[in-house]
Image 1 (cartoon, helix red, strand yellow):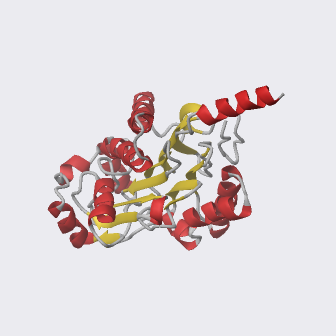
Image 2 (cartoon, one colour):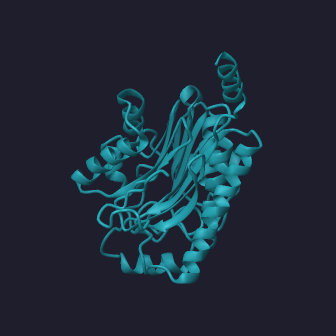
Image 3 (cartoon, one colour):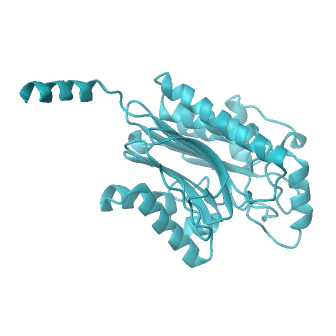
Length: 324
């Protein structure tokens, strides 16, 4: 018996710690029938490319922060999501972009908000974290900082897509949720990171900032948990959603699924909708949402998948993802 226990202990000690990554391409923008079959296939392919980019970092022993940022850069460069290229228009017909990053070690975080022309806002957010003593820079000040850091800019035409132009024309009299992109990652050293990037809401007022760049609202990472949110940002801000979700996991002992469902219920009670991607310390994921669809993907101990809409196993009225 002692020999068997010793062998089991050797096997467990030699097992590599889990790595995992989850990504989202926004809740609210994706619903059955909104995109044609070709665009749906391209969106799924870009989600897989984001997973591949993050996974390559993790598999090579890289950091969760590097993995999350690499995944979000892929989604920012895709025209199919509301971040970077393909971002929605505000009421002035411009693209104002927000992004944030956070890692669990020492609660380091950085963010930019209401910036124009920055090709990959997530890189600017990381620069704020690593190259300044601040957490959040906004507007022209953030843009000037990004230029000093050598971060690439692009002309307004690079961000524009025909789909977003049509949405802008249709939304002149009302604001509409436009989705977001994000990634959460767990590396071999047990470190967590989250990154979120968005163009905000179609026809939003110039200067409007949602939850994505606000640490604790749309983006959060701490030991044992990482969260990126998407949806109607005002409601995620009012519930301090991302930080509260992790508190429920780490202090109440709730699973990622239980905590995420509880926070979405709070958001719904206030009149909002959206979704989360969440990782726990085992590398398992919860990816719940209350909209008709949420572009999302996961790779880790729980398997691998990419989806745009509710899974057939999920309830039609409450399309909440089951981790495995």
